[in-house]
Structures are given as structure tokens and as C-alpha cells.
Image 1 (cartoon, one colour):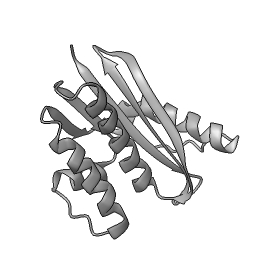
Image 2 (cartoon, one colour):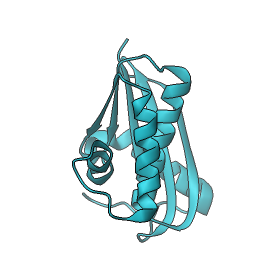
Image 3 (cartoon, one colour):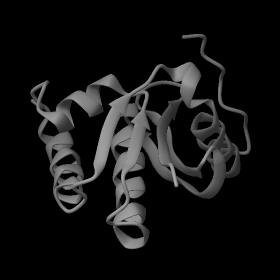
Image 4 (tube, one colour):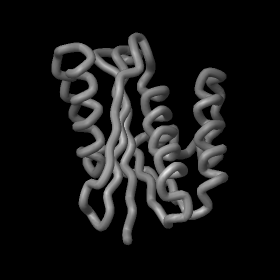
Length: 144
């Protein structure tokens, strides 16, 4: 079984703005679980990204704690702060980073990796669904 998780966060129409998060689990390429939600306004995209990663890790810890898993995020900042490659100087983000690290410590077979946004389109679609559910509007499309 090849288990992969994809996490994403969104904050629109500006940053900070209306923030949503989402994650998607796939086994052998087929979606098997997902979750998404609205965080509020004004909340930054980094908080949304960290929330998505944290919720994906929580689901993994509750459901597949010993599986070998790749968890993908298109937030270079979050991935590198969690790994320790980047410092986390923003005090309000440190609690999110620390929670993700705590969850990862209990999941020894998880590999957290950065991917380009184009490879995270399904999780992005879920953040947009959460945005529309919360605001009644479509999130602006950004070309990255």
C-alpha cells in the first residue's frame, strides 16, 4: 500500500484574509479520505498551511500511525521550518511548528516534502471549496 497525504492552506482575497485548510489522503493514487475547513478572517496563509499539515498528521496518527507515508505540502516555509532547515522567528507560528514536530515524532515513518503548487491541485481545490462554503464566493485564482 502506498499512502500519500497532500495538505494545503489558503488565505484570500489578501494575506491575511479568509483562511481555509485542507488535506487529502490517497492510497495507490486513489483518494480515500479528506477533510477541510474554515479558520476565520483575518488569518495568514502560513497559519492555514500549518493547520492543514497538522490536521493531516493528526488524522495519520489516529488512523495509520505505523504506515510509511509521504506528506506533501506546497508551503516551502512550513516544510523547512518543521524540518529545522529554516528558523521560525514568528512567535505565533512557533506553536504550529512545534505541534507538527510533536506529531511527527510519534510517526517515525512519515516523510514531509515540499512540492510545487501544480502538484498539489486536489488539496488546493478543497481549500477553495472551504472558502466558497464559508464566504459564498469563489476564491481568486492566482497564477504561480
